[in-house]
Amino acid sequence: MTFQEFSQDLNKFSFLYETKNNEIFRITDESQQRIIVSRLYYAVLHHFFQLHPNIATSSQSGKHETMMRIIQKEHATLSPIFNELKQLREWADYRPHEQAPFPINLKALLHKVKSRIIH
Image (cartoon, one colour):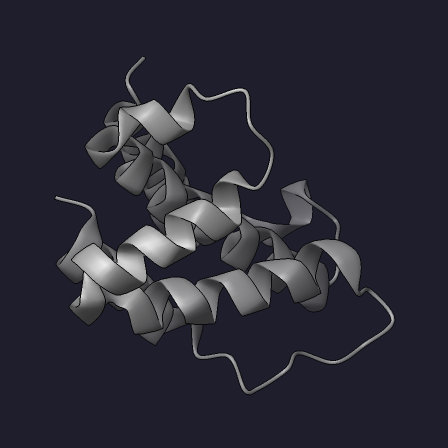
């Protein structure tokens, strides 16, 4: 599976997830929200890994920060989306005791990722 294929699968998961019966998962709305924003972030990250495979295959640490700098420099119009998702992913994965750093509009995030990044 290529990085682009993985990115598209993660993005597809986010869209398909909305159509599933929530009883299957038996988790809170906040946990579902955290899962979706985390997966969206990784969908975007793997999209850029496809464009920059040398970073994806590198054994160096700091791939996320390196990718963020490259996106800011080479893909400036997509930088705000990546930064927003990175902040939300850090909240989703590492700060269960805190509220989101800013209001989350999942439909808008899904649309941004689908229309501007995942082709």
